[in-house]
Image (cartoon, helix red, strand yellow):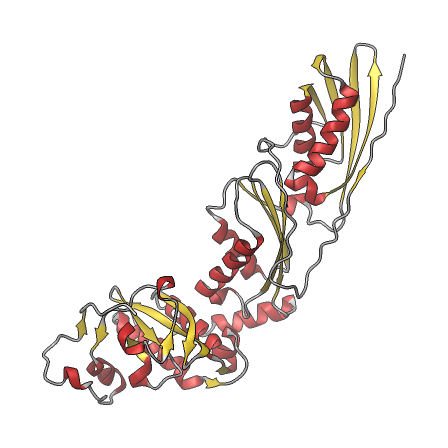
Length: 388
């Protein structure tokens, strides 16, 4: 029996880590391979050509296989020795999952009378997240749900494989920021995010993501539980305006302006900056069933955060740091000037709220603007105002 033994080593070590990172850490390239099929379930697989061979190796890695055998069909179309060397190289460099987690591929090729077989051993990088823990998605359509799960779990690291994605590292970081700003109750503190991108077949991308809240797992859970206990005193029969006012009153009554700037500081520590209080208002409104947005802009030419809250289908500006007359439930025209924001990034606030409604809520009579003194307008006006 004639045996031909060939050894082939591919060693690439990726140094990945967690902790405090800048906004982007990017590793990108692109290769035109078809998307990977289902993982192989047998330790032995038969192949007919180079395409089958590449697919077998990729599938084995996707199934976290470490030792498996490939049988070359008697009618195999190609040279097994040459194709195996090429397939190992192509898979290792052209598949996002393999490029990320495979440290080493070793194979032994044997000619046994009427057929050829290859015994393959795969070594995985100890620095990579285990294959079984990698989130795999065909498209990025449900990405926000996965991001929300990751933030709320307190994980400091995860990997997401998307077979068809055009998202860059910067896009992924922005997605994490957007999800957190929409649902700040997911974590006591917005995590700092770093992303490495590994490219594969066509638009296949694997994203290794580092998340750092600066909290231990125990502190994360303790603080999150403390935040969850803060609920707005909203009754089922309350109007949306009453609910929005109740949420505002909680924060206006309990929070002082200070340097700490997280939702936890606002809800539990009772002292926070504009962003922390604005995030807390988003969360309280959400718990009250209201749609509320965080707005990032400027006030008096200084960076500032406030909110837009939807009441009966109309959005209004809310700045909990301003006095009640000038900060609660204002339209764009009333706000523009002292406040500046990128208007195309946010909905219009084109309705004007009658101040007498706030007076009723607060049991105080607020001064009505002169232009409304002689009007008989209903409590909420839907007049269109020029968009700043």
